[in-house]
Image (cartoon, rainbow, N blue to C red; front, top):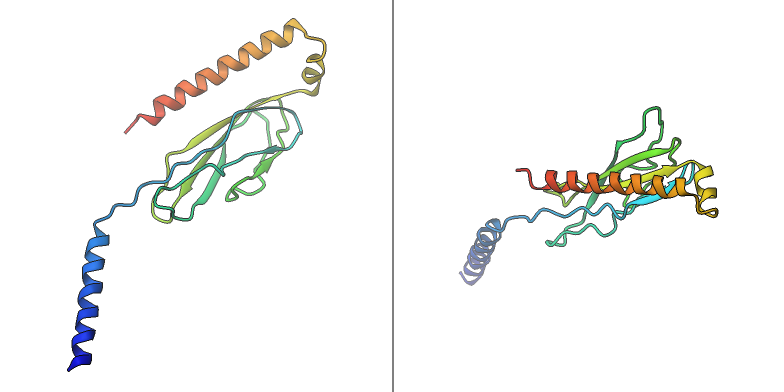
Length: 158
C-alpha cells in the first residue's frame, strides 16, 4: 500500500508540473545578422549570426539567404544553416543577406545585413583620396539609410 501511494503522489506531482509548464509561452528568438560590410569583388565575405539570441535559452538553428544580389550575380552561400556562412560576391553592387533563427518551435523575425561590393579599382582610389570615391561613398550611405528605414518599416508590420 505504501508503494502504491508513492506512485500516485509521483503521478500527481508530474501532472501538476506538466499543467504548470504547459501555460508558459515560448518567446520567439531574435536574429542578429551582424554589421553591414564594404568589400571588394571576389573577396570572401563572412556573415555572422553569433549574436542571435533566445531568452528561453533554447538551441538555435540558422537559416540564411541572399535576399538581393546584383543582376547577373551567381554568388551562393557556403552553408545556409551555418552560424557564420561565407560567400564570394562576383559582381560589384549591393547584396542583402537575410537571417532567420529558430528555437525549435518558433521562427524569429528576419534580420538583414547589407554588403556593398566595389571593384578592386575603387579600393585603389582610396589611397588617392579621389572626389569620385567620396561621391560613391555618399551614395552607398544613402542606400544603407534607405535599407535601414525599409527594414524598420517591415519590423513594425503585423
